[in-house]
Image 1 (cartoon, rainbow, N blue to C red):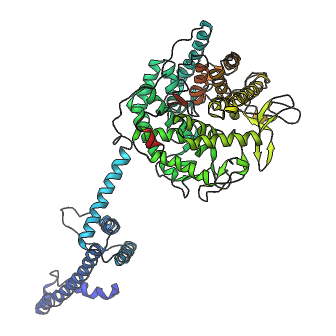
Image 2 (cartoon, rainbow, N blue to C red; image 1 turned 180 degrees about the vertical axis):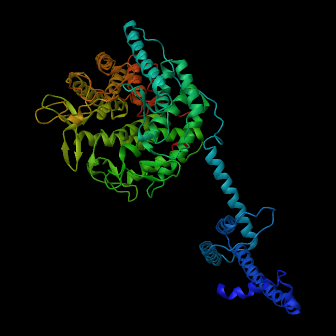
Image 3 (cartoon, rainbow, N blue to C red; image 1 turned 90 degrees about the vertical axis):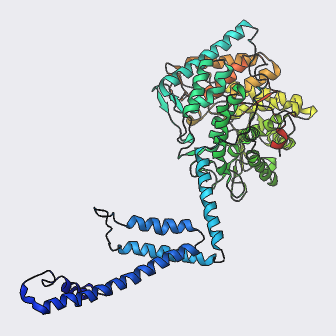
Length: 636
């Protein structure tokens, strides 16, 4: 009804006669007050009552028939209540018309609710009430799980420290002196991190402040977690204690952040697992499993090949935008196996091992070009991306983990063993070449064409070949050791041919040069460990003294060119006469470079290879021996 047509109605009731105006109104005035206005008010009340009754009937009818009552309660009652104005002073309610937009939203909610109700109209009221109870319980469980992820449910596990967590002092005084020097380097790096960047991810030693990397999102403390096991094996007990206390009080994974699954796994999960196995401190087991649970949504792809990047709050994953049409990267999804098998071992939850074993199944079904594994695999289609093969960046640690999965399983993981030795045969056939000067190197393969370049990252392969020699066919054992020695020599040459005696990021074998970087963007050194890693393996497996001498050359170069007042910094150009520092003390310098140097000058009984394997961040993980009751289930 138009508003204008109501005016006479309310005007009669509010006129002067009704309010006791001049007395001249007489009996006529009294009659209008008694009869007319009273009748209109009665009609009003009746109409309003009908409207109100219809509204209530519609609401409660929708509640009764709607199977998902939480939508109705949140979409109708909560919204409606929010639209009500506050009661006036004195506590008496007052009526107010609903805004037109709000009424439209309510009407749309009603229509949607009724449509959903029709789809499941067969449900009885008892079933509806049961569903409501179950929804409430699920919400409570989810909230509790988010708050206490990783804390409850871990099985009781008596701690038994693996063999070789501590070793004896070197018998040779000169070797002992050199090892003490490396421990002093660790203290210099750690003390400056503590002084200028405590609790942050890494240190800027020139600026003397914290350095952040988007690899870890908002997770903090990368240097602390990465250095835990190095502090332990160097017997830096006070530093280990303060690091443990920080982890207990401050290491927080409940952040809204996108992280690199690979980097967080090898540094944080690996670091926590190793710290637990060395020390037995339960906080490290709890934190490792908690973080492992947060990484599981990365595997929610059509193939189970995980995303490279994951928002650990929302569980939404994606791949690097530059990676061959949305592909996952071989070295990233292939470098989870060691840590995830140990997560299952420590948590009693087989899901971690199942996820990485599924990666194996996907790879086994694919054709490999010339027996090689391309660096890119699409997680949706399950097909290779562009055919680029590298034993350095993008591919490296995939091959390392095939071998080490077999070793960590106490040599029972036959699939991992076969995949590794088949891959090495293809690498020898198609990638390994010898320069005119007699240097053995590993080239990169791009669709059948070789690029005669070798990265610093590829230098880990010398140690890998030597470590795998024992499992090779009997007629190939000596060949694998020799291959490791040749790669070690080539990588040493890449160091020795620079002015600073530190190796470049990549070096080439073309255009008349050998083991030299020819491009400006390949001349930097960021405190990388791979060459020293190979020295350590070659020393342990051959005891040839040249590997210790080469390692000491690297120590002297680090001290001369990378050590600064605030810690250790990378170098922008290792061929230059003057240092230009990059102002970053990488967390892996403490985790890998210094640890491998310390082990190079230690006796073989410290973290012996028959009892330990090192993840790709140099975090030692124990071999799961056959007599371990949980091992067989973890290998399923």
